[in-house]
Image (cartoon, rainbow, N blue to C red; front, side, top):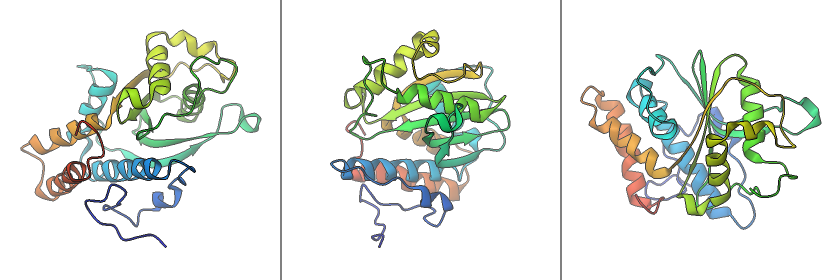
Length: 240
């Protein structure tokens, strides 16, 4: 039985707990129960809160912080926010699919995010013979998105808590041609537009941006304020 949701608890789920995405919440891995449950709560509380708000208040800011600022970029008028979305590999049944923790969908762009809290993604940045979680995600995400542009981000507590995933993301962002030379690569697709890394502090900064927006309506402001207060109360990131 699910325990009560209590604001102030790092593993509490205090927003939209009846949403069907809740059924896809990942099980915590042995030995990582606290970190995995905390990560799941972070994903849920922040992105289900942001989903209540017009994307013009926060998506441009999140995009800029993870993928660098682009003056040409305009937030879409509508945005679908889905959590823990299963995606098939472009190789079909020849290779297992992946789960993307956060998927933001507009009519012409997909933003996917992998997340962690005080853990890494469990890949070896030096062993090119083993499946690489980043490449697998790029493969599945760009394949599923079709003709739409794709951005892939990684959000963690801090880079030193996830050194392998951070190194891989930064390496592929600097040298995207390396994505074509991994043994577990799928079909090369041209719609990958950017890779970026951030921390949960980055997400807090986006929440703060919303609170500073004078035109944000009071119901949405209250939702953002509750999420921001939860971050501060539970200390879910060392630098929050």
